[in-house]
Length: 112
Image 1 (cartoon, rainbow, N blue to C red):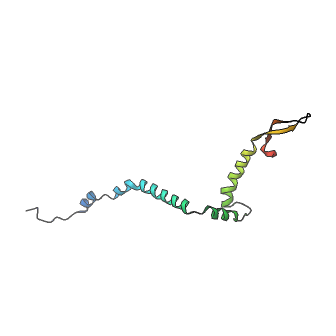
Image 2 (image 1 turned 60 degrees about the horizontal axis):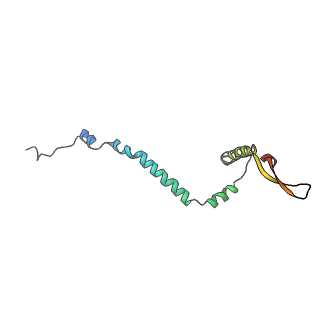
Image 3 (image 1 turned 90 degrees about the vertical axis):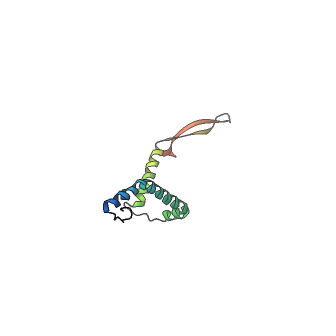
């Protein structure tokens, strides 16, 4: 009776039952969840006032540094963009009759 005779599994039978690439299907989801948890934890546990204090005490050295490349260049570019704009405001002018009138004035940000 062949039903009572034990059979031995061959390597090809094992591969048919357990495919090692089967676990890779969930890899993108696993990576996304891991990154999300890591970023959330970092943001939650970071003390922003301590980071700002550390940045303010960072040494300013001549030449190029990681801090200057990351912070200074974007700041300088933003200031250049702002300096190209004009600032419009209402200027109070004393007229000869003793009254005050408002006149619109436009000044470049560079002149402020």
